[in-house]
Image (cartoon, rainbow, N blue to C red; front, side, top):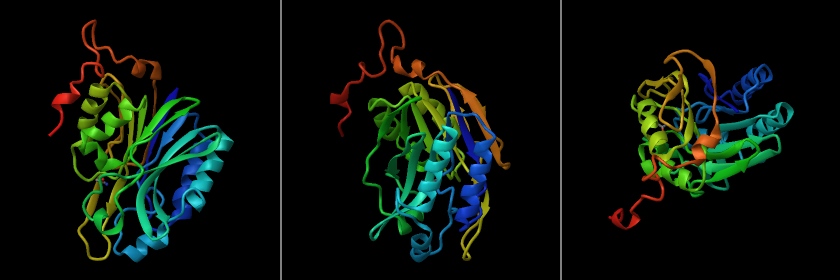
Length: 263
Ligand code: ACM
């Protein structure tokens, strides 16, 4: 199957425009799974909770989820995308998964980064894996990569590929994903955004681009440029992620010594 990222530079606050660009792009592509950045529909640098609330949407009732579900069904493609989610009084930095069958599920970011802590409630969904027509897809969001438990939990729950919507500003993640994939034998698609934001007198944020598709053997199959919007895709065989044997003596999961991992 073909896995892809769409590295975009969202226009802050213009949800319709950001979503419709995806719609245009998807119509001309044949990937089976397309991963979009974290908060791809809103932009990232909020300046107040009221602003987040205004740009957030209910999942799956809201415009973005409905529209992505529609595109997924029309084009028979799975889409993973970051959105600002509103649930009652709580706001979450979330990622949704849609497919030919419509809305599949939502993940709420577990490890909030920097000022996200001012706006969002820490996620309460835990890490989920969905068995789909193209394979077992797990979701994590950006800074979750810094906590190896995120990818490990997804892999232990059966993920064969991790869809990883991101808004990276630190430089380490693309290289770190090589290890995350190697140690768990999972594929990953890190879809980062590019461009800058500097809103409300706050510091200028430069997003690092370099979206990446990483194989379950730790090979970088594709890495995007830092500063351009880019669509990138790679052929992946998810069967490879099901076999956790490293050699005839070692199995990545069976060799774990959980008794010694407690602090
Ligand atoms: C991040 O989690 N957006 C760095």
